[in-house]
Amino acid sequence: MESSNTKEIKFSEESLEMVKGLIRRYPEGRQKSALIPVLHIAQAEFDGWLSPAVMDYVASLLDIQPIEVYEVATFYTMFNLTPVGNCVIEVCRTGPCWLNGSDDIIEHLEKKLNIKAGQTTADGMFTLKTVECLAACGNAPVMQVGVKYHEHLTTSKVDQLLDTFRAEGMISHTNPYT
Ligand code: FES
Image (cartoon, rainbow, N blue to C red; front, side, top):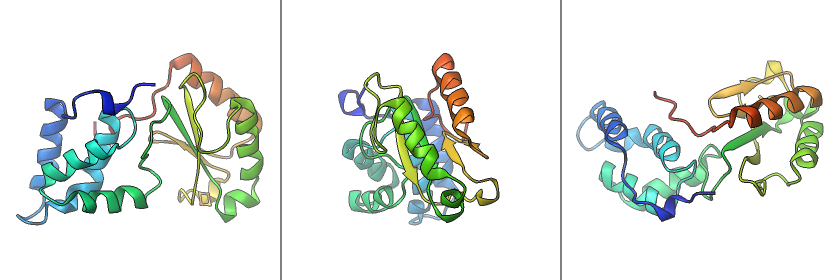
């Protein structure tokens, strides 16, 4: 698994233009308002996770203190603070999903991938996470992979999805703004 610690921390020109455009949406001195979308772009560009060096880089672009970036990045489960696999599977475990079998889905994924929630498969293909409500409770149980939701999950549907992700060489950390 490639780590963003091993390569230069610098956005591509395309991403940098996007970041500058986001910053320009806010008045001078309020560029911190662009932080969450900029972190999404950073996570997509730097292998799916935010290393301290990446967060420091984002802080410098927004002209804010690194701690202000850490505070936000550590609060939201959508930001990964350690290296992840190509395909990050986030299974909701909040009430409505739990009542509709999310525990069974998580257990099935753990067995199938031979990892526990929070871990990455040895081949670097999958990371399994559990998260709180994804705001699609009416279609529980639900999991998110990249920008896509997979709803009304069953174990056989999960198996089909895993096969598809493997066959496609799925990479879930794509820039949600492109
Ligand atoms: S409880 Fe799972 S989407 Fe809301």
